[in-house]
Image (cartoon, rainbow, N blue to C red; front, side, top):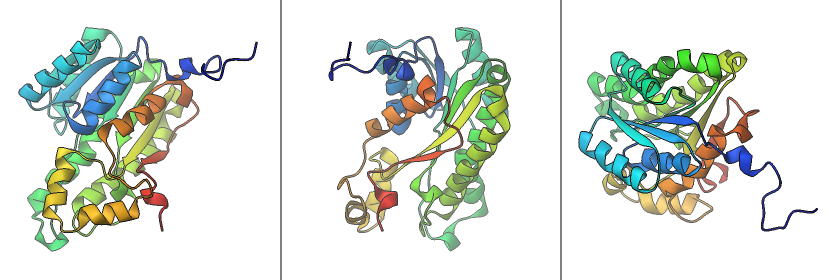
Length: 265
């Protein structure tokens, strides 16, 4: 029988089914991270939120639980190796497995390159790149036995230079190269490692940047074929795809979710 055009072909729904899977989302208590956590939960995954703010953690945990998710929130600073190891251990103890890691935690400070202090440089590299390395190393022993999906959150500055975000761009470029290296090294263990490169997404971080950068809003709209800024929810479906069985033959990619920004000359 030919499937109805209103029904997915047999097997397609299973490609996005995360039932029984467990996902850690760093920085999952707000913005892009929370939107991705919601998407993974809607696809059936249990969620572990990692963040430094107890208040935001509790709010996100309540939000997801009220939507029907199985969720726990843990206070963790993912720039610290011991916190990452504790995060992985507590998540594994609670759920008995770790199938998905979304390395979303990060931050930015916008100014001209010569205005950064060395302390700011190290802080940004640690927050955006070292954190992804540490969290990934912490879950590797579990994923080595069972396989898994690692999703690193990069940026358009992984591809393009931005004069007001040199350390951030350096860190996000590093995220893409880390993604490729881990994908090459760990495919033998059934671990798939990919990156999502959000375009200009409306979050607290970018709203502050838009306020501090004259004409940024208009420049983004002019460059983006979709004609708008992105929303955190725009990233959820991409994360579900990269977390699910439908992407089992996809590894080492950096997927722009940017309304066509990277394609526009």
